[in-house]
Amino acid sequence: MKPIYIAAYHQSKFGKLLGLTAPQIIARAVTECCAEINTPASALDVGSVAAACNFTLNQQGLLAGLMAMVPGLEAKPIEAVENACASGGQAVLSVIHKLLSGEGETGIAVGYEKMRDAEGKMDGKLIGEVLGYFSHPDNRAGKTFVFPHIFAEVMQAYQQQHGVAESALAQIAVQEYANAQWNPWAQMSKVQITLDQAMTIGGINRYVVDGLPLKTYDCSQITDGYAALILATEEGLARLGLRPQDCVQIAGWGQATDPLQTTGRDVLRPAGARRAMAKAYAMAGLQPADINVAEIHDCFTVMGAIGTEVIGKAETGAGARYWVEGKAAPDGECGINTSGGLIAKGHPIGATGIAMIGWSALQLLGKAPRELQVKDPRAAATFNIGGPICASVCTVLTAYRKPA
Image (cartoon, rainbow, N blue to C red; front, side, top):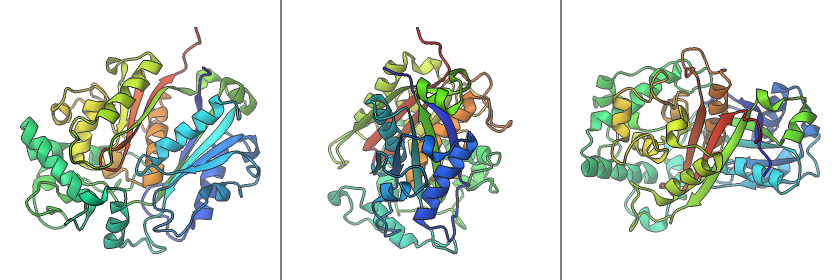
C-alpha cells in the first residue's frame, strides 16, 4: 500500500466567520491551503469536502460543486461527505481512499461549519434543534437540547460507574482553556478559567439539565471555522516539490460505526471507537505507548476522559485521572488536546476532524506554538466522533519513516 503524507495544512481562526458564505469559505479553504506550499489548485487531483449543517443552517447542498468552482479543480473527482461531527475525519479518509484507488496522487480534504449569522450571533434554540437531528428519534423525547442532555446522562453514568468526581472532569476543561491561550487559532484564546470557576454555579456556568452534572464549562463551543489538508503519495509529493522526510505520514487509520440509538449499548466503552483505534494502531505498527501527541473529540469533558481511554492512554474509568495527574498536559506523558480541544479551541463540526489531524502534524513537525510544543514528539493519535459516540474516525500519524 502506498504511503500517504500530509503535504500542507491550513485553518481559519475558529469562532466567527461573519459574512462569509459557503462558496467563499470553501474557496478560501482551498486557496489558502495551497498557498502554504505555493502550489496552484490545479496541482490537486481529487478532493472531498465536509460539513454537517450545510442544509439546515446554510441552505446549501452539492458542496462538491462549490469546490469545483475553484479554478483548477473543475471536472475532477470530488465528493461531499457527512458523518455528523466525524465529517472532517471522513473527508480525510475519502481523499486517502481516492489516492489508494489510483484516482490521483494528490488531493485536498476541506471541512467547514457556519453556525453563526453575519453579525456573529447564534440562535441557540435552532442550533440545538438541528444538531439533534444527528441522534436517534427515540433518544430525543423530552430533551430540549438533545446532545447536551445525552452527554449529561453519559457524564452521570461515567461518574457513577467509575467513582469519578465532577471536579476531575472539570479539570479537563481547565487544562484545555490553559492550552488555548497559546493557540492563535483558538476560539477561547482570550479566556482563562480556574478549577474553582469551572465548579462554581453562577454567571454563564450553570447546569445544562436539571438533575444532571453537565455544566456550561463542560461543553464545547458553537463555532464557525474551516480547515484543509493536502494529502499526497510519494509521487504526489515529488510533483509538489516536497520531500517525504519533511512531511508527516498518515501511517494508520480506522473507521467504524456503532448503532445510532444509545439504548442497549455500552457508550462508556464504545465498541466501534475502540475497533477503529485498534485498526489504526495495527496499520501503523504502533501501540499506545508509542504515542506522545493526541487530539481527541472532547465535545464534552466526559468525552475527554473516554477518549483518553479509547486511544489507550488510560484504563477504562481512569481517563479523567490521567488529566488530573497532569499526564495530558503539553509537558506530560502525552500531550492531549494541546490545541485547546473542542472545548476551548472550538468545534466547527465539519472542520473538527481535519483540524485534529492538522494540529497533530504541526506537533510532529515541531511547528506548534512554543508554549504548547510537545518535547521530542514521536507519533500522534487522533479520535474524531460523530453523534452519540456513534461514528468514529481514528488516525495514527508519524514523522517520516523510510520504507522497508
